[in-house]
Length: 230
Image 1: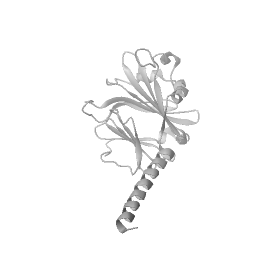
Image 2: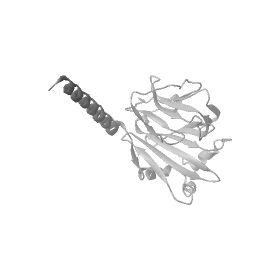
Image 3: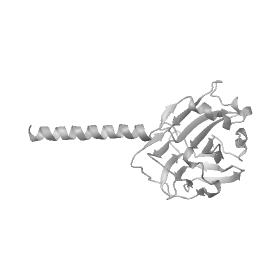
Image 4: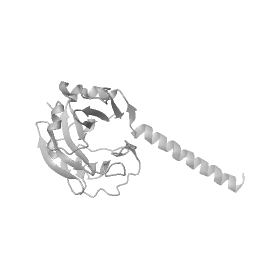
């Protein structure tokens, strides 16, 4: 076998190894799409709100991105307007103290790159980039960039949150390392930041991040009245 043939074979082996490695990482760390799991989270909504979880014309629609230790669910709530409701369960954060979860403003979230990861809602105006194998070690921190604005805060016995506008937001671990990035920046087909109600919620020995987005600014956090936050 001549030298050129050996080089070609070596290149092919390297390419195949990289390809297989990528598939293995997706299988281990990636979320799988599911249209049924989200229905297991209907209990978070009040009974009076369930009939409004529709996608006009009156068709129920929700979907999930599922992993063993976290489940990302998306619902559409219709009442005078259409709201996108994300309910994201993080099972490993069940022991997290809500009072110790920091919400940091004016954080530089530009040019954050993960060595490997996945993007949820990659074809939407609000993609979410996730670091493969992320872990928070019971010390979640919320980070907002300088273009994001908190208009008000609220809290209850087992939840706390804020409402305002989000440009970019990240979840970081106990070492301050970013693990999940939300990119709500204006795009050619999206000309403004996302009006958002954001809350952290603990129940059933688990931890939930709930994000409600609207096309119109929130004057207060009354939209959380659709949720069963007991």
